[in-house]
Image 1: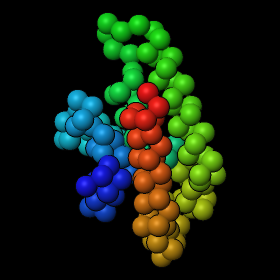
Image 2: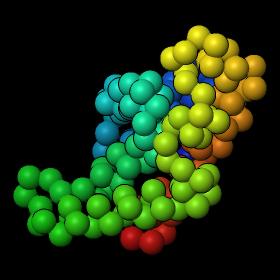
Image 3: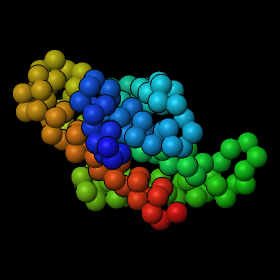
Image 4: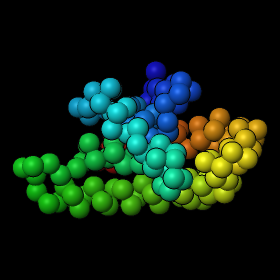
Length: 149
């Protein structure tokens, strides 16, 4: 099973977009599956269902941090490199999807509003749009982590 398939399997089984993206990378980058699901949980729905930054994008950013981020004994260059890769992630995701804002990506519907949430469900946006965003975020992060080191 490739990383995108793994992410989509988790997404289809009641894990949020951020959790689904991060878990696709976590194990091979030194974070347990359970810890990755816990740490990414708060980022779903555009960070706590506030519909700010898309959770798929934040999950991918966390994966970039696991791979390239600055730890206790690391040089500051690692932080700069991580920031540069994060900006590139956001740029590429925006090119593909028009935004990194969760609410915009869900047709400007408010998932915390009962009527808007009903519309999101009726239109199948979680199953169509969000699944695409998860797959796109995994693909972008995968290229950054494993191809263009």
